[in-house]
Image (cartoon, rainbow, N blue to C red; front, side, top):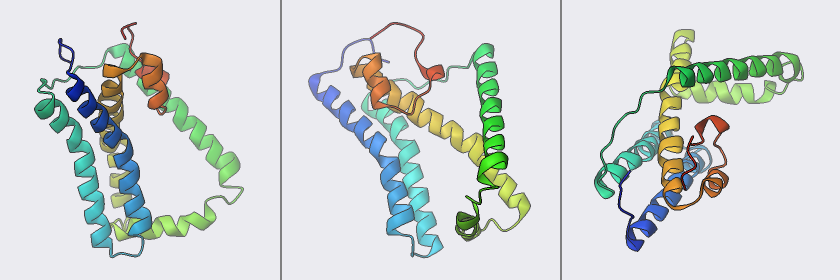
Length: 185
């Protein structure tokens, strides 16, 4: 980020921006699933799309325009990619076993299954091919956006003005792989 320390006003603005960023996804989800649960699918989809555009646009606007920092991509290392793929396969195996050994036989998905089908159908996902395409989008595209949002922006902004342990505590969804490799404050 920048080499010179932010002014007190800029620090407060950054703190407000990261607070908004931490609360925004929950607010949009609450609006979408609770407040608008009986609204027309087009209204729900419009709110969802607007919320996601705001969520994923906020970091770029904040960093590039407000903080006036240059945006750049840093490629992952081969070991980082291998670690990520290994972790993903481990989580997949655990979820697969949990579902087939306990959740499915216990009937835990019987009741919500119809509600899930109804919600997915309201998106126009009415064939196996569309369902697979949606799944691939969420597994690859949306998860990339979530990493960009939470790991790069929220955690990165928290690290600008608090110690590592506090940033981790404030951003409790982080996992060990995302912790910085340095001892910088």
